Length: 446
Image (cartoon, rainbow, N blue to C red; front, side, top):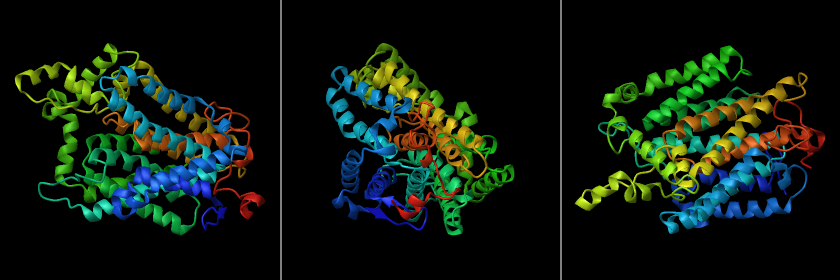
């Protein structure tokens, strides 16, 4: 079944189901629109997408096309998390987390990477990611007030303000890609408007980790996004800065200044601050270097084996805090092997995107799309890594969607090999985007 589209054309049933799964997983559609809860869109889309993918094992949709460093690392991470369940501090918590959360995230990765047949398919799913962020931002701005003592967004739909800020940062480079591309003017205008909505919502989130992430992405856009003319990079960065100046409150800038004022930051001074939590988390990792304390058991460790846990004997409450750092989270929960697998998955995605960018840049003029999408995905991953350094997002859907997009882009762009290995897929003729004419068969939807 083919679904014709005015932009790019050629959606099929599998891609539609994967798009729905992505939108609900990262865009929290059921929370935004409770009427959808009865329909269970994520479950339905995931089920149909899995069945369709298994039924379409040919060409670039073969499971073998996904072989590579990132896929191997993600699968080993899941295997290792399952292996850690019997030794977890709380085996029930670890078991239900692995089977109910991590398995879904890995499935999301496999479906995103596996469903793509061409660069245009990667673009479509990247657009879904960005559109989900725009929709979430718009709903939040309409439904939540910021003013008075409530100077920042709080109590959002399943995301907290910091998690949402990282989501917004990871979506922004994709919005920039669609804004400066050669798509139809309406698409470019809508993307620019969407970027503004995301930027305003991001500012109102008031996240210091998010602020550092957006600075890192801005620096990448200025100095690393080399396929965009320098004037456009400078102009785009200046416009985002103008949005900050126009919409950020004095309280926002006061909060950001505490990044440089360690004596005023509880994260550096309090026992429940991030630095102390990170130190204890590293301690858990070295105390349990192979299997860790178990998936989703960081809080259990804080409440049972941490130095603070003894205070409970004297009637003093101890928070069962999260790790507040994706790498500390995995290292403590899954041991050193789990940490290495997470780093390997992210590093493999960066390596794939770098090879795609170099390959496209070497291609004859007009024969390949500019390497803008690879650079956009690099920016998104940079935003996640920096934002995730201050948040426990190691198992979050947004990471696995971005890894899937990177693997999918490598699969359809790198010639004669495997995604993520630097040798590409066996179908280099699929590496087409909106910057070059589609093949006759693609135009006909065959």
